[in-house]
Length: 323
Length: 249
Ligand SMILES: Cc1cc2nc3c(=O)[nH]c(=O)nc-3n(C[C@H](O)[C@H](O)[C@H](O)COP(=O)(O)OP(=O)(O)OC[C@H]3O[C@@H](n4cnc5c(N)ncnc54)[C@H](O)[C@@H]3O)c2cc1C
Image 1: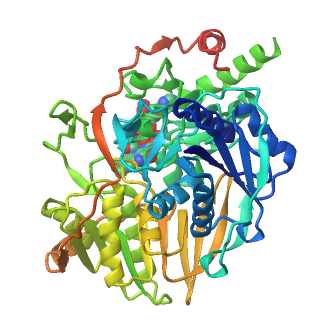
Image 2 (image 1 turned 90 degrees about the vertical axis):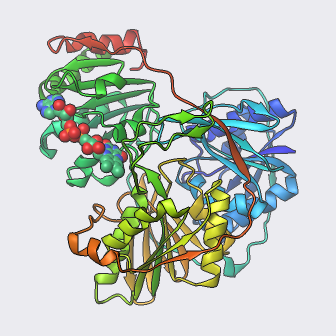
Image 3 (image 1 turned 60 degrees about the vertical axis):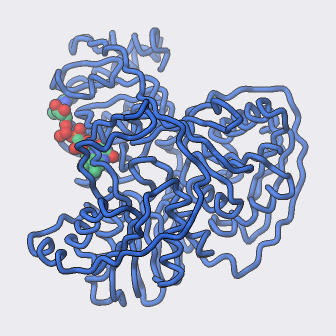
């Protein structure tokens, strides 16, 4: 009945999201009086694998089959299912990021295991297994009861505090059987942005809406994000207009994020926008309209022109940072 | 090449969400129903593909799992341009029960490209598309933000952390789509609305299926404390508050 955590790696490295998953998995294992096994697929060196022990992994299973060099959902599902069987896992935990969303539902069918996706806290009860998750794009919570023996959970990013432990993890390699006809996807091109903080990973996000008036005004948004070590984002019309790339679009139909700090310049705070950012710990709004709905979601606000406030904001941060 | 889009019938995104029966059921009183936004984008892209004479796309079908009350949403999809529609006459339980109904339809009636939205804006499960692919034992690609056809080859763009991958695949496959797949959802024109009235909706009997999960109850989020307003001439004070009070920078 162990807890199995699947974490991907990014060019051989884990990141905060992995540590969150392992911390959460380890907490579940504690609640269920069992152990935590982590599955890693792809080439990751031993020191990096071992680093997960710090967050409560008891055992790390590593799979390095060349056929799994790129993500094929069908093949990954088959491999994870083999590990679940081998480990007799009762719970499988994945991230609710793109990869987790791609694999978890397939795994649910393969294992006949009910799924609760995008959970943000430990289960309320383990019998019957009940976990709360956001529904209606953040307008409510639902208590999901999983009725099957095996349970699949996907954890929302930035929602669970990392807990450091003192444990050591044992490393074990595993060679799954992956038949060739399983893989019909072929990755023919990869484009990656390097050196930028990813919107979904960022602790601080600086965002602009139509109130920014023109794509030419984004320089200060980028400067502020850089200064704060954060990422940039935007509202939907801004990406629809092509002012910013669609990857930056946050909200119900874009990215759903949960940074520590979200700073919104010239964003009205439409319900669909808030659906993507309301899990932020702190929201700051700068808007000329004192009645803009964004102020109802915000913790701090300035009623004023974003184009005038932004340079002052940048200067104030520079000043404070140099103190 | 035949394309089918699985459509979820969801409350309008501006709906004020309320619950009844001691917070055990969603209150549908006065709710406007729409095509799930990502499904609408998938439909838009499918129609673009069909309209391009270079592509061998013969038809675009929409399918939903729902009771008769979901038919206006299917009609909307027909008005936007789908050729025909299928409705499985079943009150959706969990994602697994919906995927099972869809899989039955598709097993008996093969399509080349099966499109789903990356989530449904009601229960935000991100599950139906992936489940359907596994039930059909078919390849799936998720977080799809682009699809192009080159003869028999299908080129799919998938968003990954901090980038994109281009994937080559041949039919059949399940594509689970997100923002970017089409620029903006297509809106039905008057002519489309008139034509939709004559297009067929095939009603299919459901199969028996048990849900794997259930919802024990709902809760509304707690309301937030009031926003602290700082004077526009005193941006520095805001930055100090963020540092000293929120400890966020
Ligand atoms: C199905 C559906 C899904 C949607 N999904 C999303 C989504 O995922 N994400 C999303 O963002 N939207 C989404 N929307 C759109 C949403 O309803 C709003 O239209 C959108 O969020 C508005 O963007 P905005 O705030 O940038 O622009 P506007 O609504 O135009 O607001 C601009 C704001 O800027 C302020 N302003 C103007 N000038 C200045 C200035 N100089 N300084 C400071 N403030 C200024 C104005 O007071 C106003 O509040 C969706 C809509 C639908 C129907």
